[in-house]
Image 1 (cartoon, rainbow, N blue to C red):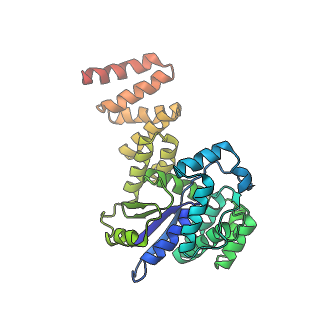
Image 2 (cartoon, rainbow, N blue to C red):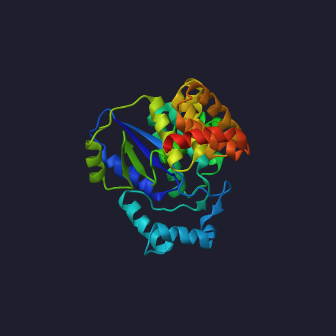
Image 3 (cartoon, helix red, strand yellow):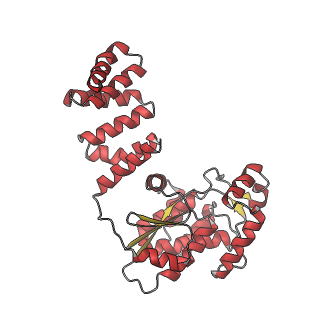
Length: 318
């Protein structure tokens, strides 16, 4: 069984959830735990800001109050500290910095690529411990390099200094969005998800459900993700998902049409027109393709060219 944990390493509940998952797992053989990225604070700066200073920002205060209705940010942090202590985390406890977790996610993703789930799990533990227990700046690549070395992933620091993992993490973030991940942490097994740092008993019950969905080919899954992103009005994300499909299955009608829709929705009208033009030639009876082709031409100010395609589609509807 593969267990995916979609989480942000600057989320205290992710660390608490890790401990609870570990308590739910003993005795389960053949289980692979994989960490996936999530962002609870996409606007966090690349250069760390002391958390106490960041908390004085009214916008951040408002966001934190929305996360825990009825509690002030200070009271909520105290509550989380108490929960963490019951899970054996700290003292001391508490992040000292507001900083982007992007490089930390790169390191964790690269640890899986180069060392597998065991090394990745050790790196994830090290990053969260550095953030919540040691009070270190996990946006600092030197700190992340030390975490990687301590986890037996000595290549990590060198990889971080380049561009390694950039595309991978950005695509994984889109994949999580496409799969409906909305909370850190979220445990995913097959097509089922358990949101939040649930008690060990709830996690164990969830895991007993097994992987109920029959696995589908990777290209079909990627196509579904692209469609999901289109449904969420993220055509640029859909195009990222479609990129390898266009390279491998560039003649497939469905792949090309979805790419054309994404290009149209993201105002890449020349790309949309080129793809739709070839689809109209190959499938002249596809009225949806004709309508979209006509609308693309129309948006480009080519009304005379658009008119016959739109008329044909409208007549068929009538």
